[in-house]
Length: 134
Image (cartoon, rainbow, N blue to C red; front, top):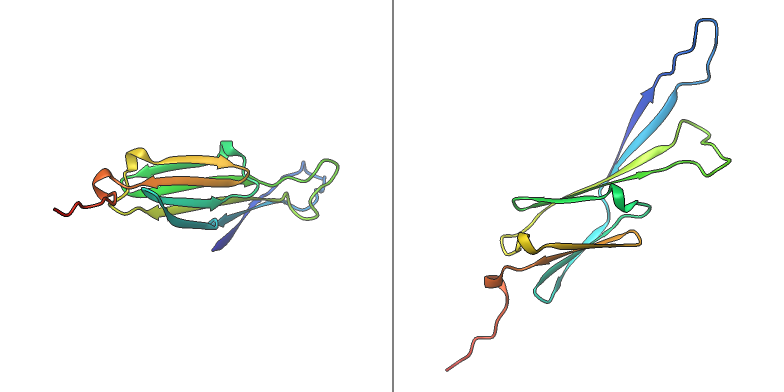
């Protein structure tokens, strides 16, 4: 799902001077590609965040909602400029409801090369166990 929002910054020139067109910076809101699967003792969530700088990534939990936000700023390469406007930023946002079996105090996350892995362990009482038959 992608939403595009245009933000126009109108530049003013001193009287009698013309300026080019107003600077335009667009912002796109994207729900990142993600997948979840069962692992030993819980679930693992994998989220693809290409081009993201680790410093722009926030991951938090509020009650049973896991929220992710990240920003990708796109700038032209050295010696180049955008043909129109000033480029765009990409905002990644994802909010997931966690089940009651997840131990929110033991959630861990790792970041590597544009991929985020979040381990969602089950509460101890939710762990599968072998029942001994007497």
